[in-house]
Amino acid sequence: MSPIDDSLIAEILIVGGGLVGLTLAISAAQSGFRVVVIDRDVPDNSTGADFDGRVSSVAAGSANLFKALGLWGMVSSEAQPIHQIRVSDGQAPRFLHYDSDDLGGQAMGYIVENRILRQALHEAVKREDRIVLKTGTSLEKLETDSFRVAATLSDGTLVRAPLAVAADGRDSSVRLSSGIGATCKEYGQMGIVCTVAHEFDHEGIAHERFLRGGPFAILPMKGKKSSLVWVEKTELARELLRLKAEAFLDELRWRFGDFLGDLGLAGRVWSYPLSLSMARDLVAQRIVLVGDAAHAIHPIAGQGLNLGLRDAAVLVEVMDDARSIGLDIGDQGTLRRYSRWRRFDGLTMALVTDGLNRLFAHDSEIFRVMRNAGLTAVNSNRPLKALFQKHAMGLLGKLPKLLEGERL
Image (cartoon, rainbow, N blue to C red; front, side, top):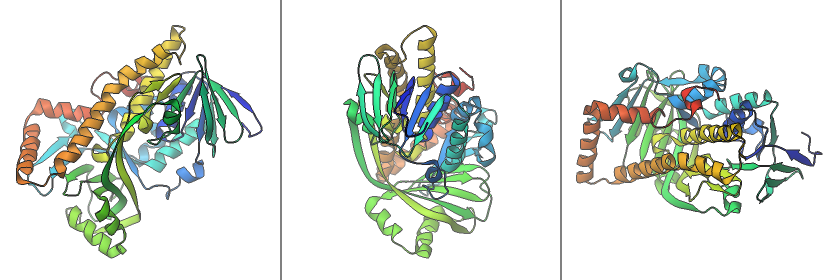
């Protein structure tokens, strides 16, 4: 649509064109819904190599979703399978070890650059006639009544739909305007993100180390490269970021170790303040929250994107079910079904990630003993370890059809 159009009619208005928002749009369009997506950014920015430098851990269940939508073939060549995960407490000799061979050899997940995912999603959107994507456009005003939402955009367009979806991140303007409060917590930590080239092959092994300042994740990428998500207390992180490149690399090497040989930075270093944000409700009148707008969690387990993708898959299934029996997709009863299905998962992940971050932040001897005992106990209990492994793979609990690889 061109900016001169002053009105658009859709069934779903999605505010936010990030990974979750676009996946939701494609899922809904393939299920027959007419969708309008508005995004403040433009594709040339968000799909570029210098946009943010982050990667995502795409769990096995999330990969099933992308396969069901016909997207996986667009990213699979750039997706590094995770064959093993090793979780350790600092330099302690014992660690928790997950191996894909324990569950039949299926990859537990994949590490994919966010820009690769964005490129695939934007290409898929272009092929969907039911999606209108308005980029470089922001939401100016959102009004709701008993029958619909009406959104005024920055270019003057008016969008009307039975339902609006907030996919606009942890500081969601839609959540704020709808009157839904949020519980927020600043961690006093910063995530340092960079890509490291190394001498030896990582063999598809992901490492999650809990160091004094916070978790230090080594995530295998295609080739002899790994992405680091290095969490430190904010004050120290800022000092590290002020270091010259070689001094910064020395600090990184000291934490990384030499098990992959010589190391070097492969690109820029990014940093992000870390916080928790949990919406007190997932729905309001004809408004529903997904992704970080609903629950933005600590990156300690790398589950943020997967949580949002589960939101998208559940919402589309709930809407599809409602439509199939003649119900209004924006009706409060329909939205409450989504809320009931998703609330427990979001709260559980928030509590687990917050609790792990606090548990491993304590440096006393008694906490170290407790942590090592816990890691050892889980590692030696095959049924319990398999349960945790399936949860990390996004294959535990009541799954929406898309996460099982089924089309709606």
